[in-house]
Length: 329
Image (cartoon, rainbow, N blue to C red; front, side, top):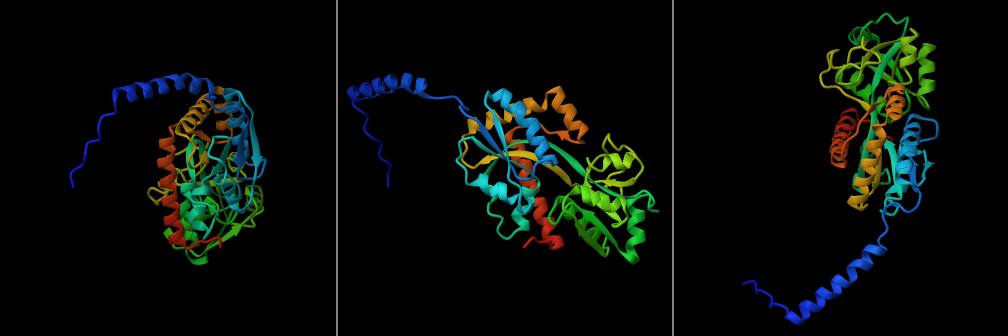
């Protein structure tokens, strides 16, 4: 059926319409309020005092200075980060409620049957920083390398401690030891990194699988022995410790990261503004120095960069969870 071209409007109507539009434009410009006009709430999906909370407060203070309004940190830990994520997924998409979380959000959509949210409920705003995991043993352990540890465990097996069930260090340890190395490996979960480190120092567990920052001081002091870093290249903090890839498991990578998310539907202009301000904060000398002292590498970039990375993380962890059969339900 042919498409009919609509009749042209009478000139008199067009002129009236133009007058109305032009007449309204100044009023809209006067009434429009720039973002933000009130405090911004940053929901941290983990308890106060941890690495995620520390990054949120560090970046949040700089963000507040740049926005001209307070950024209120609201710790909502629980269910491995799901509680905070679920809360923000239902918040108004106006830029005044943000989620600060970790790789847990990419893991939990596959780890839980119903985490209470989906990846489509959020817009990735800014990735702040990340750190690789570290596999370490007590200083007295005879293994000097990851391969030596694996060879010695072929017959007797091993156990490894982590910060908890479903953490990235748990999944990485299970995938490395059981799926890739074919070992009889037993996971020993703890309620946080500190007790996992204490158990390794006390030789209650043989191997520690944990994000690098809290472990580095013990390695440098000679109390623990770093066997492998789960990044694709060596890190300045522990230059003599090889990567897992160098140890015979190509392209193995596990990183803990901290990112800002907004509810789906948040205007693109607000997302762009927040992303730019976070990137500016990451470029500040004192922020960069603090992140480095925590063993974190800053990751400035666009919302698109973070969105691409986030979706790749979701796919990677979904594959590992399927391979290992780990579930939180």
